[in-house]
Image (cartoon, rainbow, N blue to C red; front, side, top):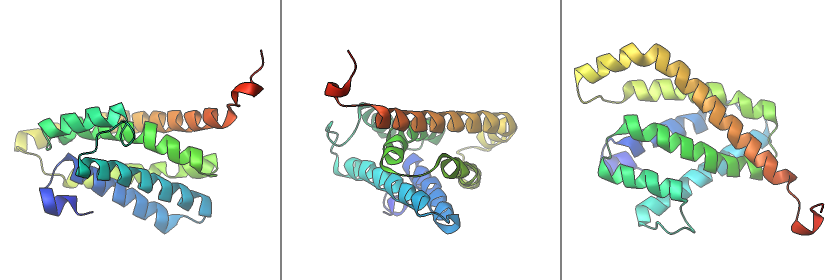
Length: 180
């Protein structure tokens, strides 16, 4: 997938760079097959969404309403990374990560160990993203300290919700087993 070469630098190319960085860091540092299994399934979910975008297949079988909404916003302004990246991350975490966690036998401590990779990749890739004006870059630099703390807390919370949702799915029983 070479989105940036085909379409230029935009919110999806930045999202792919961040995701690729995280996947590479996890693969390079993982000493557990379970975290590698989770990493693989999470990547598979991301690729499936990208392929649906690429094919223009917005059917409910391929994309959730949230992904369609994000893609619609992307279609209006592909370079609006400041708006799109948080939305893409939230949907990706709450839907794709939740599904990957559900499919994975990963332990909670290994799952939480990925957080540092996420933050490092976000910092590295967003710092390299080109801002349209010097003023925007200056504002970004001023907001960094506060915004990064809020961003990190938000990502931590979204990942917590994804974990809890996958655990809830595992606990649910078939209809016949529900107490009445």
